[in-house]
Length: 394
Image (cartoon, rainbow, N blue to C red):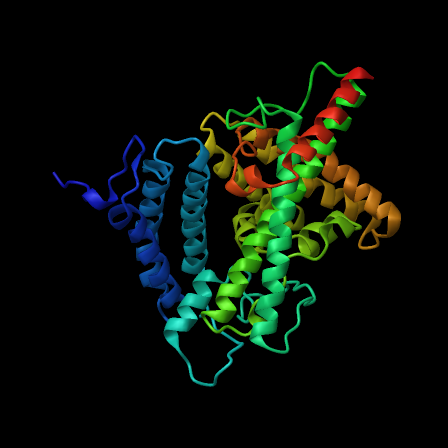
């Protein structure tokens, strides 16, 4: 009988990280597919390569324990699983691509295949490529007169967002240090409170958690920009802003297609294609948000395998439903203060469910050296606990 190659064999239990045998192979396939998709007449090779890529990515995502069994660095398993899922889906998109990808924006007339591969692999939005049509790029807010000025401005902004992230994260944990403020997790809905106070409290917590995510993503992106500009010598034009003041959104469409980051836009649209073939534009919108829900569920399941999928899939799916309702009622004219109220109410309603799913998995329970050493931590804890005691006294 033919035996299944050991390198592709799926395991049933997580084992400590083995980089060379498990993590490296799917990345090699990822880079190889990136090279092939830039060349004409290579689709057959990509079709043959993709199943191997998918199996290797699935094997790495399900068999490795990057956190070494420790609860606090469990976010490393999140990074691993999302990376493998991203590799599998993105290489599938590249596999079905019939036309070669072309890098449109070059700082030099001389082609460098190695740099093109690296740019394609790490350029999730497609800035400067022929496959990024329809992408909204926020206006630049940093000085572009020189690489040093641009990098310095991004560094300062990154440090500001890091401080904001740590500060708000401390406030979130202070609401309930022994439940969702710990790695054990817990619900944001306090059953001991009357209904209106229960949802007021949960909505405040959900809003704070949203700003934690926003600040963390901004910090990571802006620090990465500094490294890309100073070390890889990328031009500031290649590193446009990711966010455009999402709290100013006056419609759900404005929030999700313009003001929130567009890093995974193409992946979600590609994942929603099956439903678009069945139900047209409505299916495309719903499908993209359902894939987004699955993406976030994969992140939670890496931290807590008992996480329930519906807690991510349903609220993200309802974002798509909200966009369809919005278009049916107001077309493309949603805006102004009424549009802002509508957007914040719908986001808040389903944001409660999203955040509750995250806190149950212990997503906001991790601690950091910066958080523990922050001078304002004790004051923040006292302020939050005083507010929480006030709510319970009402």
